Image 1 (tube, rainbow, N blue to C red):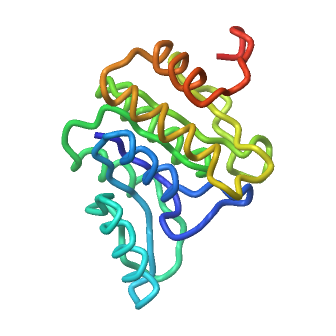
Image 2: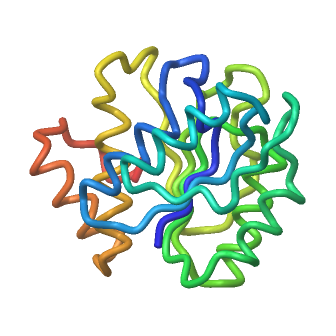
Length: 184
């Protein structure tokens, strides 16, 4: 199972949507759960119905007035959700990334962090364990191309491919320009 942590209702500053990553991971054959917060109103109902219609689980989505997701929320979700093989954190603050890193180190799940680079507090913590994959979001992603790459990559890792093999297959299949080995 893939757990995607991010705003299930919208886009971050660079236009990368946690929901788009989730949809494209489901299209790759994975079971996906989203962790986030939506309002307890009609707009929140609409978001959850759209996720459900796309085959995306939302057992760990909180229904609350607008607030930031907290590290304790993610920690509880990752303890509650069974058989997590991949965690994808989409443009979340450093404390959320640190919690995801801690939980995945303990459980053996892969961690993919979609960073906004140095934009605000959405940069990953400076110290991450070895093996964490950090992908910097492009300036914008209007057609969900980058989200599609992240979803396809996560689905391959979830299916049992090594990170290196999943990366190679995803970049080859989606015709992505190669990345120098020292940055992977």
